Amino acid sequence: MNDAILEKKLPVPHIKSGKCTATEYIVSDGLIDWTSALHLWVHGMHDQHNNPLFAPCVVFFDDTWAMVGPLGDLEQARKTCHRLAAIHDSTVSDNTRPERPKFFTPEEMTVDVMLSDLGDVLPGDPWAWNETDGRFRLNLAALGADVALGLTDRGLDAGQKIAALDKPLAEIEKVFRSCDAIQPHLVRSYLEKIRQAAMVWIRETSFHTDELETPEDDGRMLVDEIRRDGVTVSVRPAHLLTDSDKTRLTTLRVPLAAAWLERNGVWVCE
View (cartoon, rainbow, N blue to C red):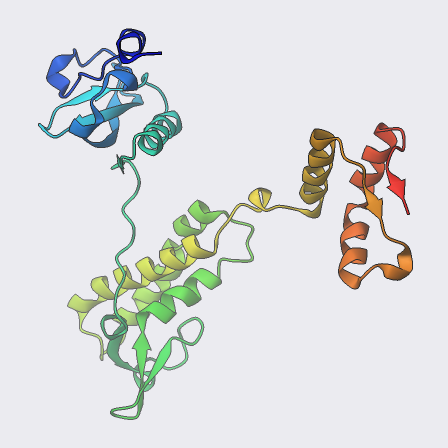
């Protein structure tokens, strides 16, 4: 097929600016000159009833934009943007995501409050040894982590844990404001650092258990591969099985047996 025929069959990328099309129209990514595109953009807006809507858009170097997919929910807009970014080697700007907590240095998180100033009234063990003056000082990051740890056994998801931080932080605020060694104007900044440290800990240690691969998932994937490839399975004699073999076969025996019966026992056991 020569170049002339290809030129007729394939669309010519010619859109280099949002000015080339009306903003309410959806532009095919095949018509966009991606050398003129700055990035993809998850554009948040509201309908006439003030309900949130999101549009996947492309932003050009002249600071104009065009829609590359239909209006819809946030997840669909994100998927469209990231899919096109992967295809066209671009990036995604997504201001709809919550701002990540700021990370502090150990020096910023260790404050001039001694163990003798507060006593043993805070959760966990938030004290850091200072080699210079040979004293324990309060570490706000450790205190935030200890507060977050106190929420781990309550069956809460990450969002519920973050919402539940208010109560322990209120108790800590009472302790701080009753301490003569802590100046009142510093209490709010201390509490904010504790909250941010706790949020980092919660987000880094929270995960959905249903996203983890279980032994049953391993078995299903193995069976799917066997069915797809149409191969036979050869099982070693028991006296040649390693401990690892035995563990894996024990874990997978139910899905393997079911698949074996479904295939009318065509696998060969040596």
